[in-house]
Length: 428
Length: 172
Image 1: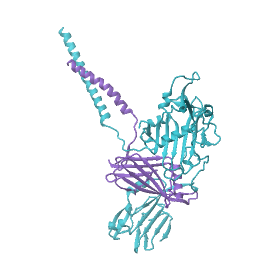
Image 2 (image 1 turned 60 degrees about the vertical axis):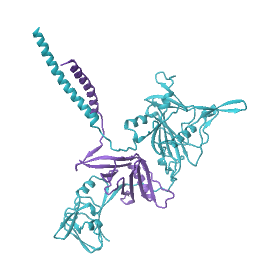
Image 3 (image 1 turned 180 degrees about the horizontal axis):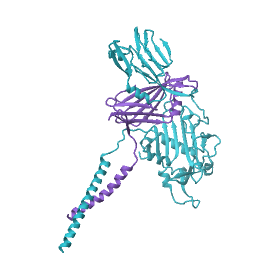
Image 4 (image 1 turned 120 degrees about the horizontal axis):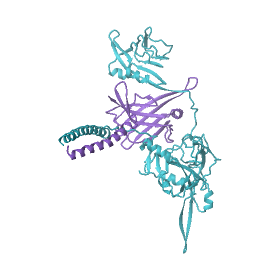
């Protein structure tokens, strides 16, 4: 008995020891977790992503993280752009684009967009609804320009394939499954004639959808900007889920989907539109080269940024022999420019510069290796006083200097091996 | 060991399983770079970034000058302090090192020459960049003088996009 008791005791001791070890490990894991979760936090400092662009219903695209943008990008069926020209610097334009598929396969080659455009001043949108159902189904709103595309890039106007009326059924993708969506909503009003109450039906057209969407954009609480807005389209559209296997629409009521799933992506700004490139369709009033102003030919071969370096960008060494200061371009500036491509650098040394005067720097020349290996286009030295300016050995070696410009009051003293490029000399 | 001690030990072990899963997720989650350390031992954080695929310059019809401008309101940046911190401004890889930085604003300019196929300058443009950090918003204004200049710059941004960033440089 005593032996067994001892054995059990030993077993317990081993068991306890192992348990304590495990608990120690567990505590370490807990500690690590608490550290990573609550102490070691990544902080994003005021990053402002315009392209990664919300109350409950309206979301500025800036406020969304990448995942949310992807989600909303999946969900938008309607895309709108509105230049309301309140600054009177262009024309007022409203554009609404519908993105959909022409087939239940949802393949890229069945993708299509059809858009409507209202050009302010050119047309008016007064006819919102139609009272007769048959007439309403085939009604196409006037006063709008229509465009469509099969590749999502190049739009064409006038004779487009898709007719935007109530007969049109579009296929959209929700969670990668096909749904059919159709504008077939209506509302009723009553009319009293003596003792008779008559119910009048009003059938929504795409014009009424268009007008209502832009009224919503204009009255949005966030103002100008790029936003996603979840809208209840159930008043306008019905939506049916398509069963690919049976090839039939499912009878399930999916109206909730249209109430809170569809997203309108819109751009709203106070400026007016000035050229066709600002349009979603790249076309204004069926004119792809629409422009309010004279157009320069802006084709160019190459663009180069011009930088002008001045006395403040140099460091100085005093020479007792010459009784003055020699300048050398600071290493910091050299590092900055060495990492930039396609730049044209001009060095402008004004010997009467306030910086030199305030710091009692009597600049008399460029030091040894002052600009060696630094790509330079022009060196300009200016002074109103009669003075010598020394360019010491190797100061302008490997600079590809093209122009040397200096005042006629300056006598240039260029040492041998100071410059190894052919350059133009201009005396001012 | 007493029963209560065993219970505590088991609770710690169970909690560590959950913490372990959480820790695994934390450590294996993908992240992004919020800054970079350069050879000068300075740590750079992006305080402001504006990117777009095009810029349209407008001319106010009541303005008698040749000023063409683009303006946009962006989200407010709370941490900007031009008096306390050092900033570098970069537009499309061009560092605007002569920028004028005040307490809550930045103004800088960039000159760009556009060359034709024979190497002759077709247009010399100066792009003026102003960023104001207000409590409710950040206002970005890009401007230039002259219609030709505005159209060349517009073309440049259509070709290259615009990527403007203001970075806080801190000593590491």
